[in-house]
Structure formats: C-alpha cells, structure tokens
Image (cartoon, rainbow, N blue to C red):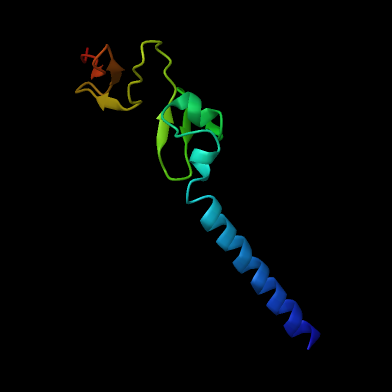
Length: 102
C-alpha cells in the first residue's frame, strides 16, 4: 500500500511540474521576464550562447540570433561556395554575396 501511495505522489508531482512549465513558460514568461527578444544582445542576456564564430544564441522556441561582428548591423550567413578549382569562398560585402572564385 505504501508503494502505491509513493507512486501516486510522484505522478502528481510530475503532473504539477509539467502544468507549471506549460502555463508559466509557454504562455508569456518571456514577455514577463523583460520583453520580446528581437536581437542577439537580448537573447544572449537570457539564454546560453553557442561557441561559434560569429556567436549564436537560440531561444527555447527555436529562433536563432547571430552576433553582428561587422559593426554595421549586418551578419552574413557562415556558409561557403565550392569553386571549380576545389577551393571555397565565403560571403562578403554589404549584400553578403559570395566572393568571386579565383
């Protein structure tokens, strides 16, 4: 009988914790904690930052913010283009276009 009571208490505690998370976090916790996240700086102030270059921050709802390392408000994607000679080039310039192949 004691084992059944312990199991029932554990199930109730798990259900209460799940309900608290759902009601408290998924429904407005972010706004109550200081406003909407709209930049890397906002995200980095609340959530862990990935060790990459440039640094990146992900919110629990899956949004990704990339640190502006250029200083002009533009952060280019960190992808690369394969050139015909086998080398790679990255994006550059104000429009984040791929650099020309050599």
